[in-house]
Amino acid sequence: MTTPIIRPLDDLRAQVRGWKSRGETIGVVPTMGALHDGHLSLVHAAKASCDRVIVTLFVNPRQFNSAEDFAKYPRTEVADAALLAPLGVDALFVPDAAEVYPPGHSTVISVSGVSEPLEGAHRPGHFDGVATVVALLFNMTGADRAFFGEKDWQQLLVVQRLVRDLKMPVEIVACPSVRAGDGLALSSRNQRLSPGARGHAATLPAVMFRAANDMGAGAEINATLDAARSDLTGAGFGPVEYLELRDALTLGAALPGRPARLLAAAWLDGVRLIDNVAVTLPN
Image 1 (cartoon, rainbow, N blue to C red):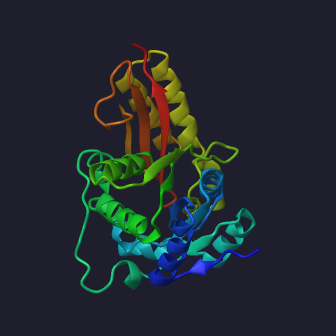
Image 2: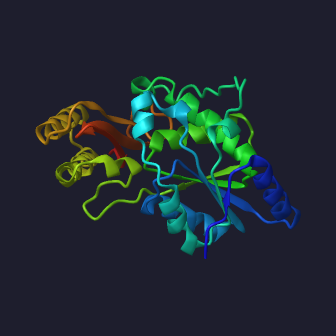
């Protein structure tokens, strides 16, 4: 079995029209390629609840903060298609940049509020690029449901707000993060870690889960976060851009009795790793 690859938007829309004419539901899994088991878990979720599944593969230049980072992002289309083949994906949509952003394209979507702290503060314009391309992909694919991993927690909140505010007829389905056996959240960027750094990378989730458990048991929040940052620095991470406890839904201050999230971004071996862990604060 091979995965049908579609590149021109007109071809994709013709296929989608046929599916919709038969009343079939369409799920989309937006990706930038370099697929791993985390992506495949989203595909499985889509297959379980939709008649047709489209995986998009587009390395979006507008969500990168440097040309170097964009150039280094792994591009593995052939391997990605092979990974998807056994799963029965109905289409792998691989548009080129001119298809997504034709000459003269000038519309940018900005989601305020949840986009501003954390990643937004450290990567100016990043979420404008995310929101814009996600809106385009929803329009291109005609999706009824879209599947996103909780590993990119702030991105998930931005997409949910985008859909809510613009009244888009798309259901956003959040899927649990997938982790390697040592606890490291799966990410395409992990491929760029040296073998030695990969061995140390699991310190990030270990420190985060320990801090989350301590705060959930009533430990003082600021002291716990300071100790966790020190642990990461001592393990070779640097810089630690942020390690913060925030309200899980607004990314404002975490309050007792409300869902909270511990979110982190830290560099290791020249690779920027992000992660998040649920926290239940005592009343």
